[in-house]
Amino acid sequence: MGGGIAQVVAGSGRRVSLYDPYPGATDRGLAAMRKSLARLAEKGGGDPDEVLGRVGPVEDLVAADLMIEAVVEDASVKEDVFRRADAALPAEAILASNTSSIPITSLAAATSRPDRVIGMHFFNPVPVLKLVEVIRGLETSDETAAAIAGLAGELGKTPAEARDFPGFVSNRILMPFINEAVWALMEGVAEPEAIDTIATLGFAHPMGPLALADLIGLDTCVAIMEVLHAGLGSDRYAPCPLLRQYVQAGRLGRKSGRGFYEYR
Ligand SMILES: NC(=O)c1ccc[n+]([C@@H]2O[C@H](COP(=O)([O-])OP(=O)(O)OC[C@H]3O[C@@H](n4cnc5c(N)ncnc54)[C@H](O)[C@@H]3O)[C@@H](O)[C@H]2O)c1
Image (tube, rainbow, N blue to C red; front, side, top):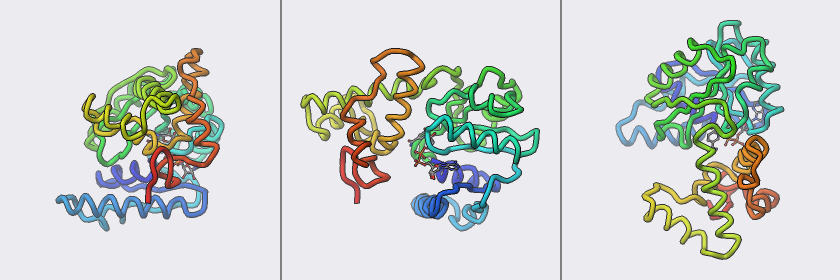
């Protein structure tokens, strides 16, 4: 997601610093960007090198007007990034999170500028999907919300505002749908292909729930469902045991080469 976000922001003419402390992560992000930009160039998009020329990997958080955080869906890791960003970025900078479910209010509380902390939730694949869910924390200012909605528009996206409730709107609807598909698979109701065909042809979804879960990452799906489960307090949001088992087995979806389907 970080690579996709960097790509669309750089595509709008802005300079982007890409930070990820894990070895090889920024290189993988840049390689994915190059591939995606090449595909877009074939369809009449701009010059990939021009866009990539505006993206620079950095070794630590640096001064910028805006941070868009897209690290793993883990509250303590994100809070730590927000604490460090609060120290590294100028006082007037906005700190945004691409989180799928973690409360914006608690990320804001890790900083000295809760009025300038906000959720800016992109959708996967970022260069293709047009939605940005904008989530205000308890103390997010009108100016911050307007700036992020304005930026989303300049990136060619449509902003939709949601309140800071577990899973916001998108994942509160999507995750139970994916989870129910996994229950159907676990209970032997149908094979993965049949479940996904029913959603694509029956509901006119571009992708079935199991293929979509593989695209999102099964570990990310479990992490989001756990936030929904704890935050909304109902067992209907608890991740299906089969989903947990796939994650335990390292079958994380596309990113590991295997989830409900195999990827080469
Ligand atoms: N996958 C999706 O479809 C999707 C869609 C919308 C939002 N999101 C959200 O985007 C975020 C990232 O999801 P993803 O699917 O790209 O996950 P991912 O596991 O593919 O990538 C997470 C990245 O975070 C990096 N990271 C871990 N700790 C870090 C730290 N302390 N500082 C900097 N980088 C660190 C990892 O090296 C990794 O490259 C999550 O909050 C997720 O909920 C994901």
